[in-house]
Image (cartoon, rainbow, N blue to C red; front, top):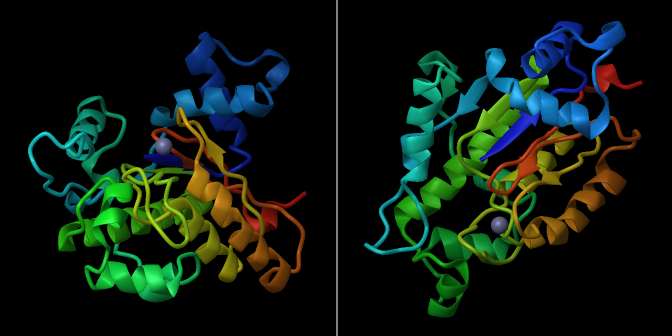
Length: 253
Ligand SMILES: [Zn+2]
């Protein structure tokens, strides 16, 4: 799961954020800064309407006793609806990412294997899940959800995906229940489209996003070859829960 947020928030959003945490307006009309502000904003993200990506296909059937808690996706949806964090109208269904987009980050050899159920037994053990048609679709749906959330955050300021954050996926293989690196894919796609220039990924999982770290080299290549302007945009979180920032090119200071 990850969140994406446009930066900066409006003054109203900052006031709401501070009011929610402290019970009163920020002193001198100014809100908290830096990561404190990020934490504040994350805590109050439920206080304003936002689009959240969700698809029933996020959940696939695994063998009984499998350690991955696949049921968390529909449960999270139910909980957010029950608490009023989102409404049914806030939930948007993503499309699975297409091959052209997947090619921006992942190697052709790896994608060909995934498309043709060609993962070896050793590769599936490393992934931690058996390959299946539904798992392959799920991986593309979850990545599509992250891209959709990123677009929504660019448009409206804040968004989320109720799956994703698969930060152990490398360009050429999967690990730790992570097939595709959704955050890297979203960054790459937005960059080649010219919607953003650079991205900062803030990973709040309990362990390192080794796949994202390795893939960042690919993203840097995009920067050198495809986007001539300096950084103005931050994007996305990763891991079990992430925070992110998005800033439109027009908001560059
Ligand atoms: Zn992890």
